[in-house]
Length: 227
Image (cartoon, rainbow, N blue to C red):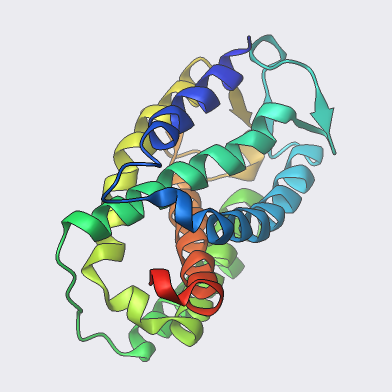
């Protein structure tokens, strides 16, 4: 078993184990989870495959199985299933146990953040990973302010984001310190928190934010009784 495959298994094992827990009953939401994973995962895998081909990052052959699809190790593809599944499970767990309230934020606040991200993307055009992660983050704020402004106003969403950074740090530190994933120096700022490129924090935010956005969108339309 490869190191990266083992990491994927560890990520999803506890959420799978508790998906049938009687208070959360996460299994009922699997259709919406599946759509979210498919839609968001496809977008990020296209970015991933293009970035890998251009040398923005790569994968240590000693820690992957060697099976590749579109130039990506199969473990990397699984990562876009295991991580969103685990984090959406966390999101629903928070909703069960934490009382929700809203912040009085206007749509213009989110759009202003999006504008800052787009300006940053232009500024960092010479660093392709930095540029792309700002583009994706900006798009998240634009789309969420249009499709689901209430999500951004919710304490549940921001508590979820904060909590995900603990497993994010553990997983990313493992991936970058072994290393399983390597980065091209030209592609990012070179600033690291321990061994983690600082851009990865925005990457995680946009990936997990998009998954909640699509998940909530699908739930409201296909499984409204579970809202």
